[in-house]
Image (cartoon, rainbow, N blue to C red):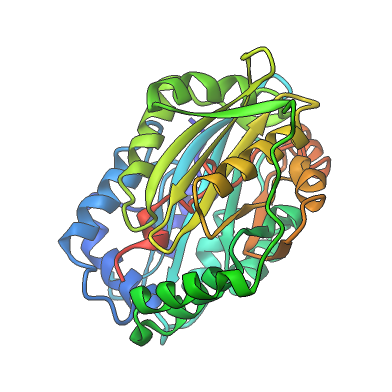
Length: 373
């Protein structure tokens, strides 16, 4: 198994080592100080989830897992949590490492974070990547030769009900106003701000059917293989992934949908969270080659008909053209997506934007992104 790139004889001098399960309470304290300073739920429940997510994942190995940096007193002052994801590119296997929370004690010297960053230097047999890099993490990635995927970092939003969407936006940023009150105002005002509805074609090229998790698991691998570089998940891996994503109640209720062509044959798939604010959060949409626009049209029509205020998600470059042709569609930078590898085939896939990153192959479905506030 490929190991992180810090030489063994440097680990002691740099005080960098693999994270252990008994480090979790210290990591929780660090996570709370950095990401949840006002949290009331960052407790032992966090510890249990963190262990399940990072230490009980299908491909956990301490050699490629989460890493910590200790100060001169042996206390953890920086950490990177890592979820291993196996990838295939051009017929060869390469281990991916999804870099999740990158934490450093606010008052400490940046030395620890810098030394952790050095463990992420590009390697032939490793793909280090993140789909949620903060500006500081972006600079660290660029310093070691990482590449930023601009299009993957975009978020898209298609509004169905204008006043309700604005009310939801206000409620999230001004909780004192109350979600129920703002949603009621939004519903009353929607007729005053009409938005052209997506119309169903007389003979639609694609139709949507909600499906069970077992059927979704069987569909995903086939669509992933159309990417030059993609996760090499087994159905067992996808089952674990869906179970973890479904457990994220803070994100909403996870639903799976098949997109079928006129003959009833599967031509696409998407999954999304039904959020309490009325917005559908799409994790991914996947479709057969040539069916991208029909899949996007069918997905948005379905989400509109389900009564959602709006739908949003992250941009996959192969669906950007289809998304751009929609009316009332907005794009903005959602996060920084960075990769670091020295594998020539993987670099080729990255340069061609032919790599599956983000959504299911990201951390937006993790409770670390949406919970423990």
